[in-house]
Length: 464
Ligand code: ARG
Image 1 (cartoon, rainbow, N blue to C red):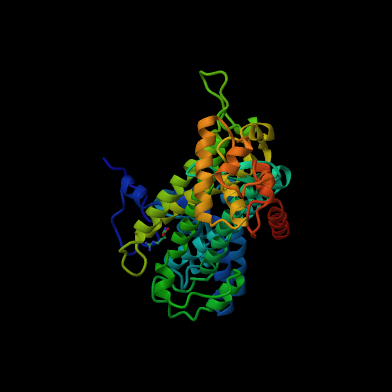
Image 2: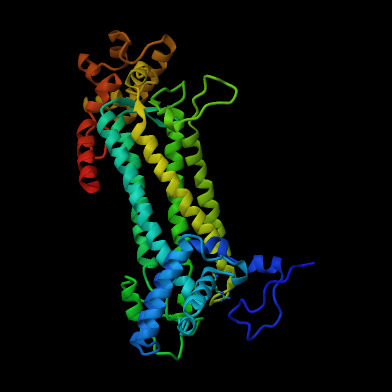
């Protein structure tokens, strides 16, 4: 037998007589998730009440009682003294009923000219604004960790890979600062998203506004919004701002996953480019020697949560009729999980980066393998007047020869080099070997020392 919930817990007991059974109550309830919004809900109510006083709906005494009451409710929620009753459905009703319990009649006036539809839109925007600020802070910290690592290990010459095959030599700092660029776009996207989050929906009511002469601009000002949402239907319908936040975080998740993958590879015995700190690694319950990069693997995995929740969020709003539909209540499940997941991924990522050590010996040991200097030799020939396509062919044959005979390009006998092209002279030596190659990178943004200095200066200034 389904258990009956208490009668008259609901604010709409005037209209509906039947009470929901427990399973129905649980389906309807969002308090398990939206309790996290209580501070924002109370901040919104304080602003709304202040405005109701300004337009004469509340007396000074009533406003005073509401303010004190809401503060008390906030304190009581904080210490768990307010029951988060699923029969009340959501944080809005929990707070209103707790307020009325504490201050009586004035509390019954608070919801004047307001609906939970514009109330939740407000709470979510206040919450998203803070979430974005926290995320951007964490992103900046992670960027700073990469910049510090680039300062410390930046001059190490290492291979760059395309198709995960050795491509050209680079300075390690260049590779580290590439992540800083990606993360910067993530931060910029979040900052841009914040502009669309930062508009005030309150006053839209359920969908059409209200006959009460609310001062929407005052509420917006009190809550730090530079503008109000122009259209009441849009104000209660719009969840683009959450989908956009999910998109920004899916993008961030993808970036983190690519970095994590790079470093998982670099920290293998086979590569050995990076030694991760023990504090961010785990071991095996069976194999005593194991040092696993589980944190990086989980950071890589978190992109799945972010991407999945973006799909969930978009699917939730797809084909919804204009106006509020209860489907929207489930938006929080996607966006809250995404934000907390990415916050923790960012925090741990910064720790991984700031404690990792590059291993110059290991990197240098194999640097001659893989013909990282082949492009450099071709460009040496270009500088002697050979067309690039011809030079490419000449060096390709030299690489094949060296691979066959167990040589590097630098160790090929001079006669072989000269036989390949008469333009190859003793000065070619300065263009062979990874360390020499990085000395000759010319354009801005290339992987050499002077470009690295410029990038480092840029980021140090920007992140200060
Ligand atoms: N708890 C709801 C949400 O999170 C807000 C309530 C709107 N409910 C309603 N029946 N109009 O979206």
